[in-house]
Length: 392
Image (cartoon, rainbow, N blue to C red; front, top):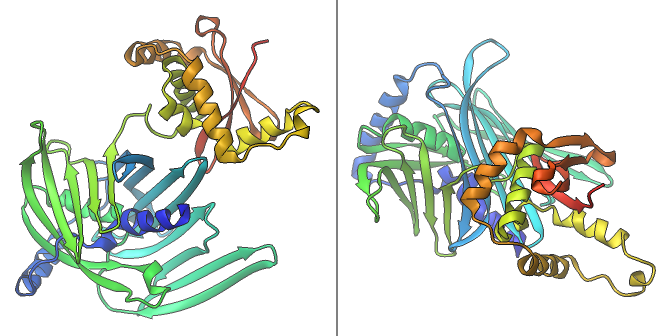
């Protein structure tokens, strides 16, 4: 079930540009294509000011299901030219299981796809690398097993421009937010092509201009449809930064909503320590569930059992997780989150970090925060809680 959900989410979110915003009527398509080509022809070299980073929580049918980080930033190629590097990273958490898929791609200044890759964690999927050639693209699919590595190389022919990844779609949309209309191009669907489907599909971005959401918040909206799917990208009207992405399919409603650092996975040991402290001090089970590396916490709990306890069957991982969350629910205080955040900001530079065996890091808070000690681990660029340890 988890893998099926991730396939839905990744096909819909990580490769959301594949889900074709707003097809125009066939009679409108030539002018939409001309509008797109005219716009990208005017784009200058990639700059940090034109790029963006967007991080948000992922909701599936209204329930929190993970996180997404989307970015498009300038990079220097080996030949010294500037390119865009677009990245879509999706983390899906279903109970104690965490799965990750990351898609990266490089584009020239006119947003032509040049090369890219797809990597996953805990999915058992092959690695995909692709590069633009004179006649189309060449893909390399690498499968790693206990018996070794198997590579499959394929060539796909086409002669046209193409975007790929949600980040590149959002990057283009940011250039035309002040110019409402339709802009048609192609999207490169590498994963679908490897399954025998078309390598390119037409996409039409419909830039609506400013709209007011319920509650009075003003945004610039880009809406699109593909078959029975509807996509909506919302941008801040002043900064042109993404604030929300919403996708409706017959199977699910998927949303990525902008979030602050307390709601997102930590990319540093300090960040994970602060999130853990906030969760413990406020009784926020959502944060504690999200920051905990349940598989490692489970293994440590199993190995720490007494001889008497070892005679009993260890509960499965999901039962263990639910029991721990219930313990926290009943035991932890419910302090005001705003007050605790301010307190943690003041003492964050007083936290001490020590390297431990196995790549673990011990974070020790000052006595003013009860000398809290948390054991942390990094995996795939994300830091998580492994254990709470007693004060010494």
